[in-house]
Length: 115
Image (cartoon, rainbow, N blue to C red; front, side):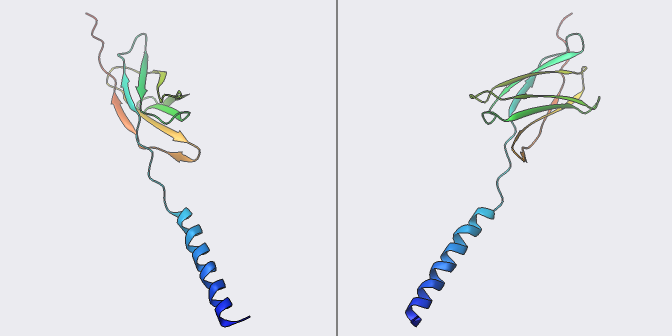
């Protein structure tokens, strides 16, 4: 092989390595979905939201009781889930796709507006 061939092979090898190493860069965190909670009815709240990634698993976790529920976001990124909770409980909501979990949104369960 000539020196010119060796340089060409080296350049292709370096270009390939640089191209493949770009795939190992860290990914951005998933944004939290938009979520609102209803006031508790018989100890159950309904959390509705949007802005999730289509097909993402949506997790609702009541920090006060240590219990949670999950559902899947629609193709439009909308979701609804029901969870045991009381007025004033702190509920975390986030989305997950594959092995990547998103940022959490905290919801404080509102009081009932019924007299």
